[in-house]
Image (cartoon, rainbow, N blue to C red; front, top):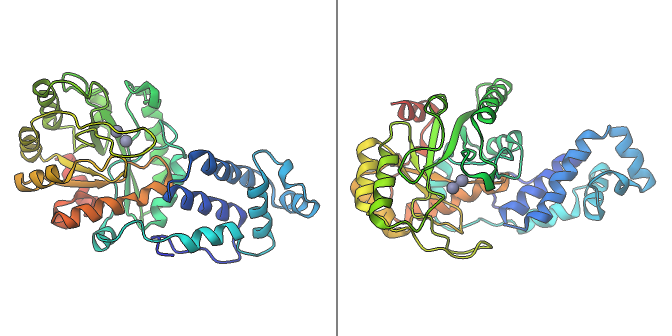
Length: 348
Ligand SMILES: [Zn+2]
Ligand SMILES: [Zn+2]
């Protein structure tokens, strides 16, 4: 297996086998319905006392437990017998590298400025995102759930974000020194370029990634003003998926928004706002020619996963392939920086 996470070998705990299967399915972009079965089974297994789990296995009644079906029961049973579950083995065997190229840059990444949990439209709890980031060798991860306007994505109100920040503190206390979960947001850039969260809340965050999610077809002049205003805002650190294009995938295709990229990237460079290289294959945003333009103008970059599930955190490999091929120097990429340098930059 060439994935960035070392393969599991027997013996393996049933919940570890299930979560690794979910990770590998997410990584190969399997349907969320299939992944969900394994993620749900993890919860059930963790909530079931070990002796009860063994008794169900011995009696052949694992499927009587909530959320356990035929394939998840087989995985649990094989793990309880001390074997490496066959399904896990086959997934590990076929897990090749996501992409050829950019390996060195990927290995030098230390964090990610864009990730979602089940608090907004992600599929997994914060703790699971963090655990996977640790397994991938990250040193930090910015948790950037959506802002209130994005109701379809269950964007966080001031109250919910406040609550999330105390959970981030608790996660960091339990993690110790080796890893830092950063407080963040993917804040909507409103029509006039203002941000969809209060100034006081934004001031409490470590990383602010700002993205356009509405009125993507606005005329170029107002769209340029909107984006320039956002990236010039001292609270904004990263400009997320700047063109909004979709190039493949279940949501279909969407053309780039129209704006004066020269003006937007010049404002990014002037205000120290990083241009995101969004690694999601369906976004692949910005396109090559705009990455080259931002490079020439002197912008910083953030290679982000925009992960909505733990297995998607590794998708930064795609962004790294692009950045390396386009000649973006590693030191201009803020996600290669250690957490102290990153926080110096975001707070300046
Ligand atoms: Zn977004
Ligand atoms: Zn996002």
